Image (cartoon, helix red, strand yellow):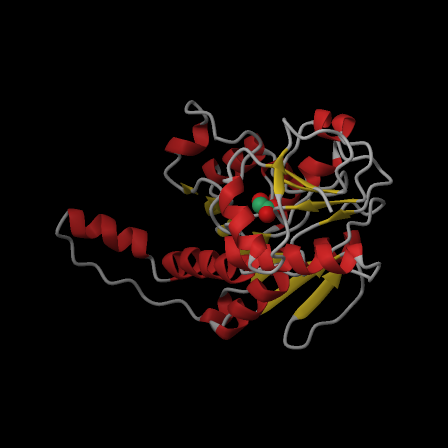
Length: 305
Ligand code: GLV
């Protein structure tokens, strides 16, 4: 079996070693030098050229959970398999926890006060007044939702199919979104990027949130209309936003998000692909696929995730 590898940010030798723990015979080939005829590719954001050079691929394994950037070049008939959780969901639940508790307990205000040696305790809100809304209840969203529940906040979840999840209020479809938004003190985006979710978080959506709400985006920058978010913050409609993903990454140095006092920017680190867990998952799926067995995480091209 021949496997080519492509990733700008990841070290192939590390992946070789991590995969070999589960597939001792695997030999990754750097895609540039690999002659045609490879069976599989393991990649993150590969160029179209990889698919031209390797016309015989039987499947492509993504080094991440969101496959929007891969779908663009990956031939429609080639099975594309994404990472499922592999440790990212817990990190994302941690990210949401850090941001929500910081806002809820007004840590930024107290840090500011400390700089001025100012002693001003605020009354504490009731967690029941801070419902959290999660957009996307897949592998990642469902774990983040459970964490928010365990922190004691009421949780609403939105998905595209009418499946109820115990312990939370679920909403679905366009009407469900309209119905959920007025409840959400914090809106968390964990949707896959598809033509349907592109620019979803626009002025209309932000205006339907209660005044003084917060936004956390851990999915894709192209789902948020930057200008609408800035305007909502400046009008006080939103009280703050924590953004981990952006239309352009790295976020350009001149982008207004960097200096906005109500925005927290992190450099796409809310869910970092954990090498060992991800390598184990890919090795298991690769071997199963090669043996003709079904694998989970196969991207549905119609749905786009
Ligand atoms: C990261 O953004 C991923 O999709 O895994």
